[in-house]
Amino acid sequence: MISFDRRMIRFGNGDIEIAYGKTERNEGFLLFSNLDQPQPIGEISFPKDGRADRHILQDDDIMMTFSCPESIDAVINCLNTIKKLAFTE
Image (cartoon, rainbow, N blue to C red):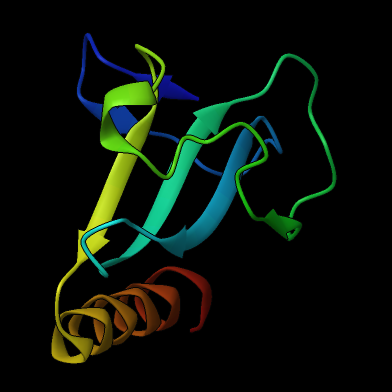
């Protein structure tokens, strides 16, 4: 759930849609949106309603944009590190 009162995205319940694509500025993006009904975790989609345009985002959407591949690598490295820290002994 995307929670703006705590500025937190809480993953693990299947209630966040993760979409990806390329913006009109040729930036890569990930888009996180609240779902009305939980879905299986791991499904990733392309936005179906034009929300690749920053001006069409819903109030509770969060978009991460990437203007260079090194930024994507940095996020991936952080996610892999916290995956190891949180879920391995």
